[in-house]
Length: 234
Image (tube, rainbow, N blue to C red; front, side):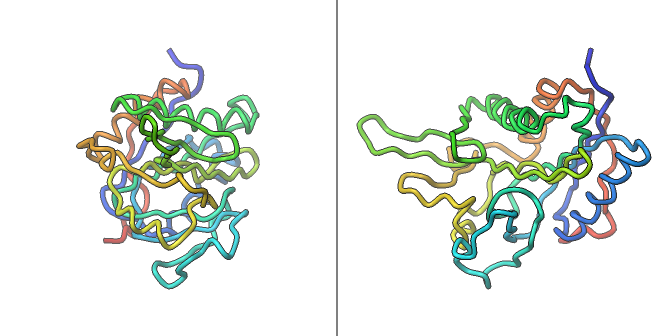
């Protein structure tokens, strides 16, 4: 039925400390590479925070005192994580999945787009703009496109970590402390499923992501307990 071994799938029921999550991912990446531990997709929410990718520009951090700021070590620029946003950390062995980074990123984009399709939302990618976008331009009106999902990736010895973040119902004003992903062009903004007028819950989004992952990554999924239950932050 599938082309690859089963992937573990975990969902944290409460917010997870960012630094603890990154430390866990580092350990799991080593275990996947060194001891053959199962691949893992981990869904969670963080408390409000900003992260700086390897291409982040200091001027894009507009308010350094609003929320904690972390150096993420992933690709990309500044982004926001917080309640109402589904973060999916993706720990997969890319060396066994084609060993093609461009193709892998394209699959992450296709995964988000397929999940959005479950809610009749058309997600699109744009040259020069990372992530997944929704065209909200009205007939005869000025161009308006809003980002609904961010993608930031790191590979260590061909094992991926970090991943995607999908805006389900975050406080969109929290993005105001940064220039999200360095995008400041007129007509570009940030949206969420609920901002689009859709009564989507986090559980709804999780199920759509789960079904779409099977379709795009050609892997069965095995539900496992969430990591780090002892350090989850309220």
